[in-house]
Length: 455
Image (cartoon, rainbow, N blue to C red):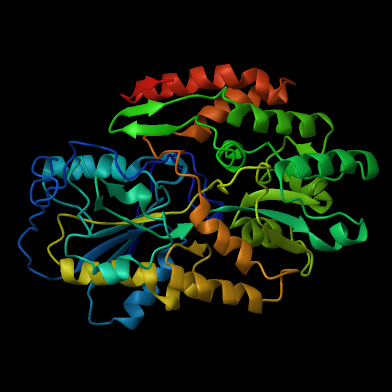
């Protein structure tokens, strides 16, 4: 059985094009003094003392977005003995907070909780643990031998004081996408450092005006560039505390690079999802830093870039930096309800949907967080003959390099950037000049969400 619900006013998720407005990051030790009480539902009880509700078996209810609907349907087909209600909802796209709102209602009415939920956001643990909604997974529910199969760091947003409360579905690590035939015909070398990247952008402005080496026009621009540069704009330091520093050298060096390339017009200020960009710039891309899903979602599906042109390389690094770092733009999570009366079937589905080659390796649109499935997924990309090189090596190398200093909190860096920096950029201001304003805006957003802010 499949039904649909929808958050009023929210746009639906569309695979790798998910808008990541609620994409805020956390580290393993956040939310001290929160709880995961399986039989309470109100957030009371000891965090490590999960006590399941009475296990009566029966039908499990699974909430998915439209992109993950095929996953639930495939599981049902392969497991006909498992009774399921499959419900489609917006997946918390655009930071709609639909799931949190509904869980709050279910906690008051003491009924209605789904057994398993997919969310397009990575920050659900910041409220779901305290609300007593999500069950611990590394306390006997799922074997450690299985949990150890995730890419290093992938489940950090799901980990609270050593306890795992959700599983990462896919990753969105950033790499450098580029047009291989153009690079070769123009005699350019793929840049290995950000200094080389900027220098090449300056050459392109002179030698091939109109061509682009990137775009700064999307709301997730800070997650591609500033995050990769180890800019401390979003360091979650505790349950409700964050350190915000946007004017450090790690921030200003990347902001200055962007300003230089915006000024010489090799860095676009339009969104890759705008009709303007697709019409006027899609065929003028020499290079573009972006997440793993850019290859299929942006170049192949949106831009209709012909096969044999798009290639991937490691994201440039700052010269002399011994620790490679990349950003992240997306990825989703699966949560197991602490209120499930059929943990056996719910856990089996949760494990299957996050680890199976049948879905993650062969059907999932995004780079799987589960390492073995990622290998199958990459082999599928290679067999498609779409890419100009083997994209496996740079994507695999970047997966564990997502810089952990950019945290997963309850406020949206994308929303802040969109309301603070993007209008100024459109008006001709430099990003460097707006860094203090950006810091003030982050501070205000964080405090409005109950965070103590340090600098």
